[in-house]
Length: 309
Image (cartoon, rainbow, N blue to C red; front, side):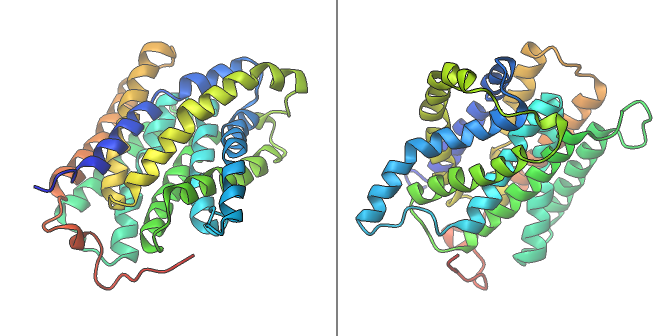
């Protein structure tokens, strides 16, 4: 066994578990007066402001800063922006379960676009993920209430994240700063676009006094949480295939659903529990049944070329 072989999985697992608690500060900002779209925008703009001087310094030294990673930055940044919005617009458990149906989208992308075989394990994982979606959305149940705006954002965010992870593995390697900077840069673009949409649920721009009062806390969350966690996730993502990445990130769902059940006071009944069990089981099936047979060379098909963005 090679030393450090499982470090990427460990780093992603830790980051995902910490992400599972991010709904707490996000909702705290909302309670202080930041409406959903603007609370989400702040989680991108403040880290971007911290990283921007470093990006400018890198450009002056003729190093790449991350501006070139438009597609990956938009895909991953948009996914997380929509996910954060959903945490404020629907129940935490629903948001997490809908987002972490990601193994379904990862499997569809790997089989349909990357040419990987649809094994019985992947098929079972796909079935469980989709069954979890049906359970949490309560399709066919007149008492379930159907999908709301937050549900739709959570579902779309999982699809975009799986696509972004696949695209990242198909592009030429970039250093971690580039990827993290691109994430916050293009995530800011998406978040600002969402904030400007004429949807009452997304809220209104905050006052300058409110922003100044929250600035120390926004800086603390950006520097102490968002930048380090995204740094760890990007470092590990380039070393873990999209399917397994989706599984490891499901630790956020476990931590998030558990913490929300204890702290948020939101309803968590049989349907939510069934959806959570099915989606998390899909991840376990993928992990237990989809272990690589060989070393790193097995992670990327020979027919899958590297390309730059």
